[in-house]
Image 1 (tube, rainbow, N blue to C red):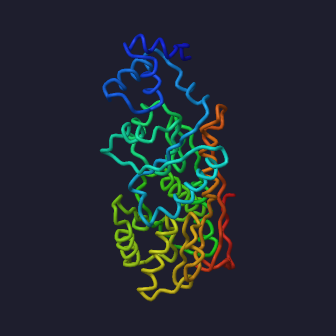
Image 2: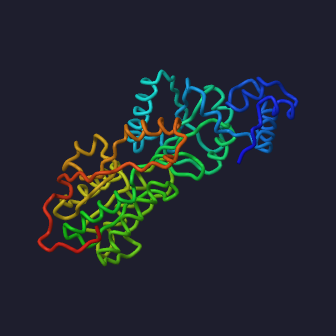
Image 3: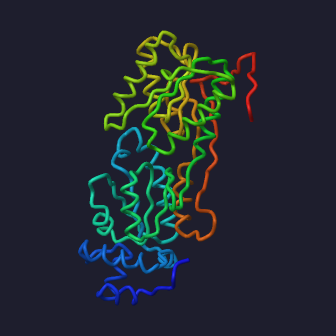
Length: 337
C-alpha cells in the first residue's frame, strides 16, 4: 500500500519548489525533461499515491490517437468515439483537445503542450508509448485497447467475431476466410479468436491460407486488395469473408465485383463496426454493430471511477443485411450458445 507521502516531501527530496512538483505530477510545461523525470522518479520511489490526482476536477482533457489510425479506413470509427468523448466533456464543462501520436514522438512534450488534467487514448498504441504515458502521472483511460494497469473500455470483440462467423456457418458456408490487419491490435486479436472458436465449435478445420493478416502499413487499402486477390486465387477460394472491419469488407466487395463474383450468391461478406458506409454499400453490408459514441462516453466515465469497474466490456449486435442474406440454409449446424 502506498505511503502517505505529500507533495512538499517530494519537493524537499527533489530540491525543487512545491509548484514544480505539482507541474511534474500533472504533466504541465515549465520544467526541463531532466527535472521532470527526477521528480517523478523520486515520487515513485517514495511511494506517492498517484491516484490522488483523480480526485481533482477535470477541466482539460486530451484525446490521443495513434497516427496509424489517422487514415480514411479507421477514422470513420474513431471519429465517432471521439464525438462520444466530446459529448461527455460538453456535459461536464471540460475542454477537450486532440493530438495524434506515434513512436519517436516526445510524448511528455506533446502532452504538456495541451496542459491536460486527464488523457483518453483510443485504438492501438505501442507498449513504449503507454510506458511514457504512465510517466506523466495523469489519469488515463483507454478506449478500444487493453493494457495492464490502465482502466479501459472495449467492445466485446471476441463475441462479435464469434457471432459473425456463426452467422456465416448457419448460412451453409464452408470456406470462411478472415481478412484482417495486424493482430498487434487487441481488438483484431480478439475478433480472430472469436472467428476461430466458432469454426472449432462447428467442427470446421480450414487451412491457414484462409486467414490473411495485412501488415501494418500506411496504405492499408492496397495490402487488403492484395490479400483479397490472394484468397480468391486459392484452388478452393472462400465462399464467405469475415473482414476485420467494415472498410476492409467494402474493399473485399469491390474486388469481388471486379472479378465478376455475385454477393451473396457466390460469396458472402460480413464486416465489423457498422460505420455509416456499411448501410450505403451495394449490396448493404452485414456487420457487427458497436455503439461507438457510448465507447467514448464510457472512457470519460472511467476517468472518474475509483471502484472495480476499470475494465468495461460493451455489448455488440449482429446486423444482417443483403451481403450475407438473412436466409439460413435448410440444414442447421449444432453450435455452442
